[in-house]
Image: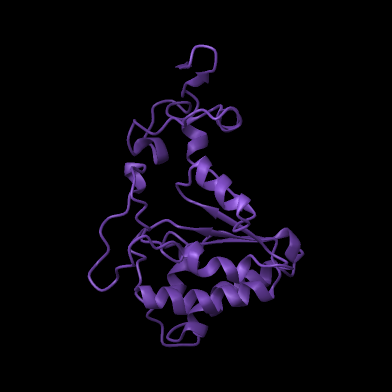
Amino acid sequence: MRGDDRGYLLHSFLASRSNQRADIYGGSVENRCRFPLEILDAILTVWDSDRVGIKICPSDDYNDSTVSYNEQLETYEYYIGELMKRKLMFINLSRRGCHLGRDQDEYFKSAPRPSGLEIPANYEPLHHFGKMIKFEGSPTLLMVNHEYTVSEANDLIRAGKIDLICFGRPFIYNPDLISRIRDDKPFATNDRGGAVNYGPYQDINENYNDWPSFNASTQRVEI
């Protein structure tokens, strides 16, 4: 299930800045979580819970979706608690909106958060919410994403803090991403700008199927 992030419809119900409703879908944390949970419950009438996953992003700042740190904690402690009752296959906990202290894709790099909506330095949702999902006997797998390195992923999995990690945009810039991970080769990064993510483009392969692969024998990239 997607939509509980990036300021999309379901996410806009969760955040008090965007949800100004005065009915049963606005106001309290329980009311703001009501609509996303109703959508999820409708999905679960069609598919078993062990075939359904959801992506959430408590720290998101995309599309003016930023909320205060206290609201993040209050909303997602309740929301994740409700998600766990449904015994989903996985919860994907994204860290978009966090400052990672290193270079990121400029197109998705977080802007300074508005006054009063700051989050603590070095904050990551995994540190606060991870144990609500990942524990002995948990019916739900914990996935994380957004700008993780292979080294970070390996460390988190070996430490037992997560079950899964997903890489998204690196698959665009690295047609041989799996080989690079297996052979411990560096990832290529986006040096072509924001058009890579959403266009415009003249040819359907432009910025999508025209990235070079890494040649292990020459230690260089090749088209």
